[in-house]
Length: 148
Image 1 (cartoon, rainbow, N blue to C red):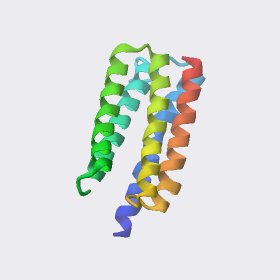
Image 2: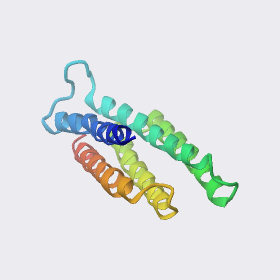
Image 3: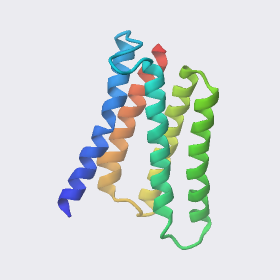
């Protein structure tokens, strides 16, 4: 069981690599790099995928909850987050979309904080994985936003 938890931690932190890589490219003035023709677009698409993935994890957490207002709120919020980020990708310029990504990641963190307070996720997960990773993502997105 411990190896699965370790794998979770490694995969979560490895998910930071594209954010840091794309932000570094933008910081260094590279609009394209190797297979990425458009760094801002690559960052946006990766952010879109991860945001929807995180919203999906919230959907998964509510499945075993008894019917309640909390369950309904989680169901609606997880779907709204995915739809809003998708519509944002389709309709916003890269700079405004990156700003939307920042807002969405902070909202997702707030939802996870709510899960933490409800004892649906552990203190270790929230404090050692979700919080530091989200802060790194938000910082890298903020750097990209300021330069795009």
